[in-house]
Length: 104
Image (cartoon, rainbow, N blue to C red):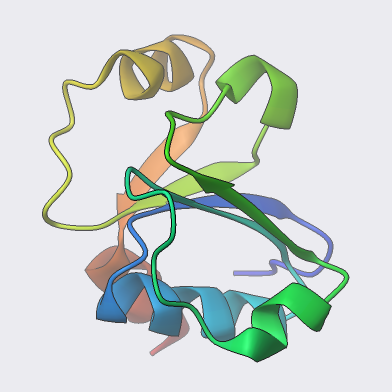
C-alpha cells in the first residue's frame, strides 16, 4: 500500500490514533487527526510537522478534506453522519488493525 502524498483522515486521538498518525506521517502521508475532545494530548512534534492537521472539538468536514481514505478507531461508531457521507462518496474506511495488516 503506497500512502506517500495521500490525504488520510484519522478518527480518534487516543493512544492508537496517535500511533497511527505517527506511522502515516513517517510514510509521507498528509494526516488530518480528528477527535471530539477540544484539546486531546498529542505529541508536540505533530504541530511542527507540515503534513499534520488537527480537527479537534468538532466532526470533520469530509467535503473540505477530501481524504483518500479514513482510519477509524475501534471506539468510534460507524454510523456517524460524516462516515456515511464518506462511504457515499466512495472513500474507503478502514480500521487501525486493517491498516497494520496491509503493511505487515
